[in-house]
Length: 283
Image 1 (spheres, rainbow, N blue to C red):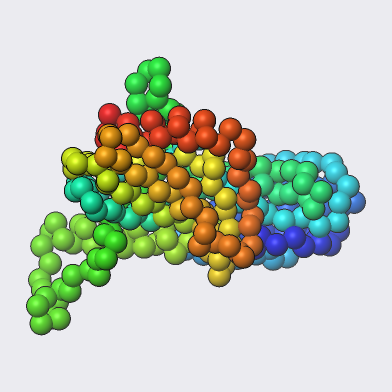
Image 2: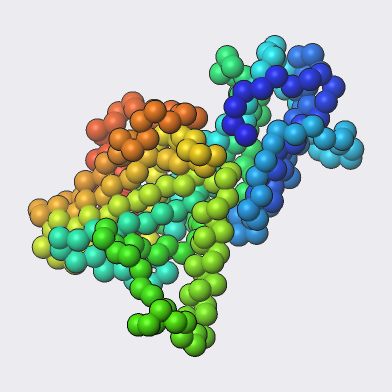
C-alpha cells in the first residue's frame, strides 16, 4: 500500500483505508484526488490498494500539477498531539512499569519520488480538545480508544481456575466489548501502532489517567504490512522529574516511511517531558 508505483494515464486508482477511501487519477502532469473520510470510531478493518477502479463521477476533487512518473501514499503522524484515556485509573507502583499499545490515525500524503507532496488529507475525523491550563496546555486530537495497561511480565488471567468460562457480569461484558473494539483498532493496517512504556523509578505511586502522545520525534515504519512507530518511554525518576525517550532499536532494518525531524532534540524532550508529566498525572 505504501510503495511507489507508476500509475497509467487516464486511470483512476483507489486505496481502501479501513472504511475510508482515497482515489487518485493521473493524466500527463495533472493529478486528481478524492477522499472519502469517516469518523475514527466508525472505522472497519479493511485495507488494500492501490487498485484500478471505474471513473468517478459527481465527486469533489483536488488537482495538482507536477511532473513525475511514480507516486506513493505515505502515512505521517499528526502534528497535533493525540489524547487518549485509560479505561480505569492506573496506579504504577515504585519499581514497576506499565505498557500501553495504541493505534493512531495518520495524516496521508501522496508524494512523488522527488519528495514533492501532491496531496494531503486525513482519512479519519476526530474531535479536538484543549488539554492542560490556558498558558501551557495543548490542542489535542481526542481519540475514542480506551487504554488497557499490560505489566512487563504479565500473561493475562484465565477465565476460570479450571480453564472453563464463567458467566459474564454486565460490567465484564462491557469490558469485553471495549477490548474487542480495541483489538479491532489494532487490526487496522492504515493506523500507526505505537507502544508506550511508563516506568516508575520514583518513591511514590504514579497515577495514569490520560496520555498525551506527541509525535514530533517518532519515525514510522512498515512491519509485515502493519504501520509501527518508535517506542515512547516515559520514566519517573527518583528526584521526582520525568524523562522522555524515543527508542528505535527494535525497528532497525525495517522500511522507514516517515522520518522524524531531530532538530532541537534535547530542548524538545525537556519541553515534552513536562507536558507528559502533566498529562499522565491528569493535571
